[in-house]
Image 1 (cartoon, rainbow, N blue to C red):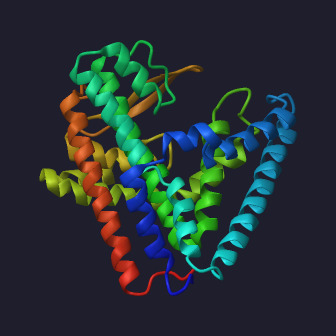
Image 2: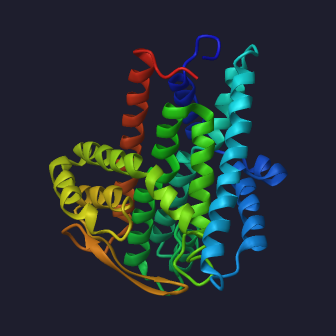
Length: 325
C-alpha cells in the first residue's frame, strides 16, 4: 500500500489521466515509449538468437529463454520500484504516471476516430493509411467497407489487449503485473506469427500471451455486451458472443469481436490478406459485412460506454478495499 492508497485507486487515476491527455507527442519524440523500449529489447534478442526455423528446437528454447529473462528482469525492476515508491511521500503519483503510459484507451479511440473521419470524407487513400496503423493485415487494396470493418475489429481486440488486460493484471499484481503483461503482449505482436522466421522462436510468447488474455478477453466481451444496452442490443450481443466466439482462430480475440458484431448487428472477421498470404477466418455475427463510417461512430460510442463501465467497476473495488500494492 502506498500511504493508504490501494492499487485500484491508482489504476482509476491512471485510466483517467491517460484518457484525458494520452501519451504526449513531445515525450515520445524525446525518449520514446515504454513499449518501444520493450520492443528494442525483444528485437535485439530475436536478431541475435533466431535461426528463422533452420533449427526449430533451438529457436523455441531461445525465444522462451529470452522472454523469460525479460520477464524476470522487468518484474524485478518494477517490483523494486513499486516497493521503493511505497516508502516515498507522494510516490503513488510516480506509479500512477508510469501505469498511465501502459494503458492505451485514448490512443485507440484516436486511431479509430481518424479512420472514421477519413471515411466520412470519402478519402479512401487516407483511410487505408490510418487503418494500417492499427491492423497487421495488408490494407493497400481495401475498399471503404473493408476498412471500416478492419477498424471495428481492431477496436474490439485492442480494447482487450490495450486497456482491459493491463487493468486486470494491475488489479492482480500491481505495476509488475501490468509491465510483465505488456512485455509478453509486445513479444506476441512481434514474434507471434506463423512464418518461417517466427514459427518456432515466437511460439512460447504466443502461448503465454494466450494464457494471460484468457480472463481479460472474456471480461472485455462481457463488458461490450453490457455496454450494448446503450444500443438496445445487449441480448443480441450475448447471443452472438456465446455462439461465435469459439469459432475465431484465436482463443481470445473472438470474444470481444463477436460481442461487438452482435452489438452493431454486423459481421466481422472473414478472410484477411496479410503479407504471408490470405488467412481464411470465419465470419462472426449475423448482419452485413459492408460497414460504413456511421458504424465506426457507433462502435466508438460502444467503446466509451465500456470504458465508463470498467472505470465504475474499479471504483467499486476501490471503495470496498481494493488490492493493496
